[in-house]
Image (tube, rainbow over the protein chains, first blue to last red):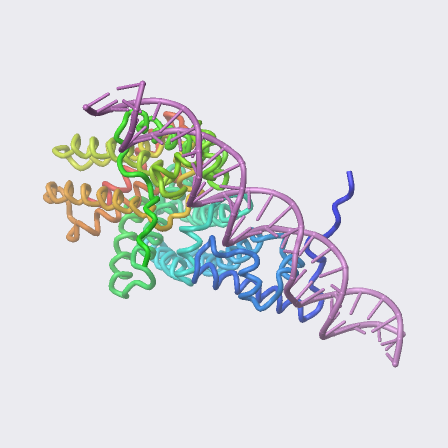
Length: 207
Length: 207
DNA sequence: ACATAATGCGAGCGATGGCTCACAATTGTC
DNA sequence: GACAATTGTGAGCCATCGCTCGCATTATGT
């Protein structure tokens, strides 16, 4: 068998110029996803939007999937940054206060770049490589479980992994549905009400 | 403007023969979605699988989207049948028993044709026409709110629409994640545990 | 200045997919 | 049996898409 022609993405982006090209590509991809949706995001279209040629695109990314994955990664990093911060912040706080903060953060996180968030949630097939979203989810579950373990005395649950699953799933779903159904930012009042309810739901369950 | 050449899906499927064709198409679509995934479900491929020519396909459906929508509708009808039955059954039962039943039903519903359910959840872009899933969601919320209203005295919530949103969202998400993460059917034990937890979560919130 | 490497270009190839249309086969009607 | 309506056929048109490759442009080293 002939060895692969070796025309995969060029090695490193060593010069300054190419970093700019890479960034332009990712940002162009995000813009197209937002403005025109997933199926319109062809490699040719993305290259034009980025002010770059298709050839250059394939020098840095093996295909459309990789570009979209890069956008998703970028978005997830932003979200996880916020979430990790929150967990650090609440580590030594009592359950009620901690849960309230986490709910608020979940809503904030889902409100980051809401249009992009919506497209990612609604239009991107969760197939192939794009499963690394799962990694983030697992991290969130693990962090929550760790918090529960260090506050065992305030709780009455036996299986903390199960409890973490129930809490994280509920909080995430509530934030997700609330933000997506209201197309964009929620009013402060709605956020307060929702936070109260979700907190009662989860705290009542844990204690 | 020239009047549209009038080559849209042929009017009615009046004869017996055509009903069979239509059914074959929908079932073929479902089979392909399950076995090969969404992108492999081209109109040509579907027609072959159904033992029918592409031409016939376009006599009954305006395109691939419509076929997939038909499959989704079929699946959702099955689910809503079960859910409607459950709501009728619990109408006069106390909150604890009612919620427990609803949780069980949610799990059952998500376990109907799990492979198809997974494909629909993971691979189908929720775009365009496929938003009528929303209709079913609204129906579920409405039914739950109706139940809450007729049991107001057992509850302490003020805003019942909000309470319904919180409960339905949580139950649905728990059932969804549990079923999808465990690839297929859950063990009886897992189902019992999950039902207990979800029931405690929701009942604790409502009372 | 010159050579060499790194980066960028974009016409166009091959593949695939949605969809049409001219026609054939079947069914219903008298 | 004759005729019209209904239903079924499938080769192939056209558009699009992912991707390549030979070449142009720009940076780096000496």
